[in-house]
Amino acid sequence: MPQDLAEIYRTTYRALVRFLYRKVWDAARAEDLAQEAFARAVVHKPDNARGWLFIVAANMARDDARRAARERRHLTLLKAEPQSEPATDDAVHAETERTQVRAALEQLTPRDREVLLLWDSGLSYDEIAAQTGLARGAIGTTLARARRRLVEAYEAGRSGEHVARG
Amino acid sequence: MSHVDDGILHSYLDGELSAAEAREVDAHVAHCPDCRRRLDEERALIARAAELLAVATPPDRALPPFRAGDVKAPTRLWWQVRLPLAWAATVALALGIGTYLGRDVQRAPEAEAARSTAATPSPTRAESPKQELARRETRVAAPGAARTPPAAPLGPPQPRARVDNIALPPPEPVRSADTAAAGVADRVRLEERAARIALRKESGDERSQWQKGDAISIDSARRVLGTDPLVVPGVPIEALYRGRAIGYADVVIVEQALDATTMIEVINARTAPQLLDQVVVASAPAARPELARAADSLAAVAKRPAPLAAKAAGQVRPDLFRDVRGPLSADSLAALRRRLQPLRAATGP
Image (cartoon, rainbow over all chains, first blue to last red; front, side, top):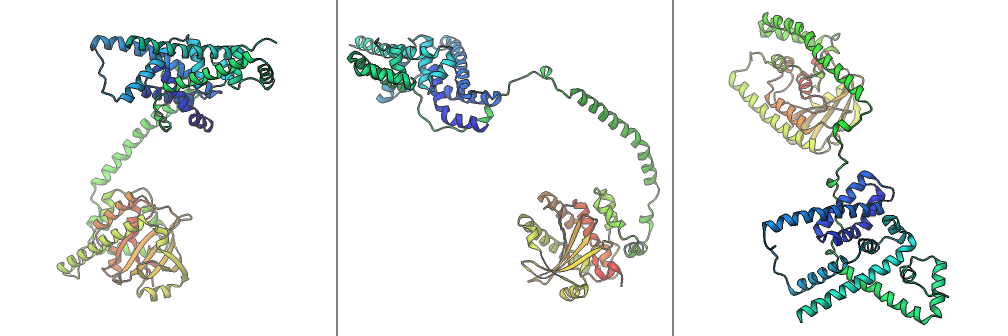
C-alpha cells in the first residue's frame, strides 16, 4: 500500500467501518466492505482517496443491501424464525437502542441521511459537497434538518414503544 | 439585521464558516437573545444527534492490518488485454519451438555415433590395473597437460558412470583383504565425522572458520604438517599460508588458481585432539553453497572409494579424510577431491 494510502487507512478505516455499519448493520460485514474499499483504492490509486473511499463504500453498501434483501426473502421462505442467542440485560438494552436509532435513521431522506453519516465519519462540508453533489452552502441546512429529524424520529419511536408497553 | 438561519447556525457550530462569516454570527448573536437561545438549542441538538449516532456504532476494535489478500485487481478477460509486445512474444515462441525441434534433428546422428562407440569394447576396461595406473601417473605428472584436466570436473557434471569408472580402485596388491576392509571402515567413519563437521561449518560462518595467516614456504608447510601438504595437481599454486582454525592444531592453506576468477583453497589441517590430517577444499571467492548441495557432496564422500592417485603416491596415510565444499557442483568438488595428491607427487621431485 502506498505511503499516503497507508496513512489514510490508519486515520479513516474506523470511520469507514462506522459509515458502512450504519448502512449494512453488521459489524463483520462492514469491516469486510471497508477492507475491500481500501483494496480497490490500492488498485485504482484515486486522487482524493478519502472521498473516493466513501463513495465506493456507499455503492458497495447499497449493492450489499440489495443482495441482503434478496437473500432475506429466500431465507424467510426456508426458516420461519431466526435463532437469537440469549443475551444479558445490558446487551438487550444496547441492542434495543441500536435498533431504535437504526429505525430513526431510516426515516430520514436518503440525502439527509447520507450527509449526516458523512459528517459523522469526519468529512468536511467541502468533501460532503463534492461527494453528494450538493452546494456547499446547502450542507449546513441539510445537516440541521437531518439532525432534527433523527432526534425527533428517535424520540417518537421511544414514546411510541412506551405507549405500546404501558 | 435578519436572524441567522439554521443552516448558518449549524455551519457555525460545526466550525465550517469562514472567519468573516463567523464574526458576523458572533456580532448578531451578541445582541439577539432569540438567536442566542436558538444557538444553544442547535448546539444541544447536534450533541444529541451525535450521541444517537454513537449508539449505532460497531464494537470498537483495534485497527486491523490491511488485508492485502483481499485486493482484487480489476478483472480483465484475457482477450481484452492488449499486450504491446504480443507480436514479439509470438515471434520468440515460434523461434523457440523451431530451435527446439531443429536441435533434436541435429542430435540424431550424434546419438547414432555415440551408440556405435559404446558398442566397441572400452580400451580402459581392457587394460590391466597396472597399465591403467601408469597411464594415470603420466597424465598427472605431465606438466604440459597441467591446465587441461581440472577443466573437465569444473564443467557440467560428468555422467555418473564415467566418474565411477575413473574412481574404481585397483585390486589391493600389498595389503591383505581384512586390513583393507578395516582401513575402509576407518575411512568411512572419519568421513562421516567430516561430514558432520562440514555441516556444522555450513551453518556457521564458513569463511571465518579458516583464517589465513602469514604466507609460508613449501618447506615450512611440510614442517608444520610433518608431511607433504595435499594439493590439486596440475593447478597452479598461488601461495601457501599458515592457517588458524578453532579445533585444529596445524593448518596449512594452499591457494590454487583454477582459472583467472576462481581460486580454490586446499586446507590441510590436523585436528587438535586426534592429530588427524584434515583436508578441505573450499572455494575462496565464492558464496556459501546451498546446504542441499553440501549434503549432496557429502553423500558422494561416503560412497567414494579410496583415491587411486593418492595411493599410487604412497605417501597419504589412510586416516586422511576429504571434505569438499564450495560453490562448484558436487561432482566437480568430488572430482577435485579425488585428485588431491601430496605436493611432491603432484609437482614432481
